Amino acid sequence: MEKIGLFWGSTTGNQEEASKFLIDYMTSEGFKIDSHDIRSTNPSEMLNYKKLIIGCPTWNVGELQEDWENIYEEYKKLDFTGIKAAFFGCGDQVGYSDNFLDAIGLLAKPFINNNGQLIGRWSTDGYEFDASLALDGDEFLGLGLDNDNQEDETEERLIIWAEIIRDDF
Ligand SMILES: Cc1cc2nc3c(=O)[nH]c(=O)nc-3n(C[C@H](O)[C@H](O)[C@H](O)COP(=O)(O)O)c2cc1C
Image (cartoon, rainbow, N blue to C red):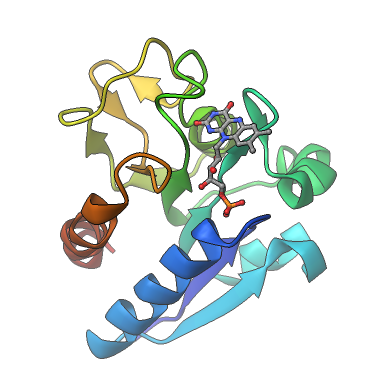
């Protein structure tokens, strides 16, 4: 089976913890998965995979986590033809209701524009917020996690989403 490349960034550990959960889950499902902290990874390494999982929390009111911010210009130039990717991100729907999960949109939209095939959209049911760049119609472009306000839902959300992307990969 082809490998999955998981590329993540995390400042206070929530996205990292969710990434570890996904690694364990996908490994137990028989996938081989390489984990890359984007802090120490050249974004062009994404092109070595046909299947990607991309994880980025939203920081600084509607911006990417800092390590993603550092490589964003280069990321936006990548040609994702022939690559499938699933996006997930941590956010805070109470503290940042006008920018909830914006980073998912900031990363997913250039991926789609550069010929990538996006999988793993996620319903907005169960979240309350005012605006998000992650929205496409009434769905998020990827999985949203909110450990600041809904930590008890994180594991179940991860399991359900992991099953969806497992089938779509
Ligand atoms: C200064 C600051 C700004 C933030 N801005 C946003 C934001 O604009 N949108 C959002 O959804 N979450 C925002 N958050 C919440 C973080 O995304 C959330 O705490 C996340 O779990 C952090 O992930 P990490 O621990 O992997 O770094 C912000 C948090 C802080 C401390």
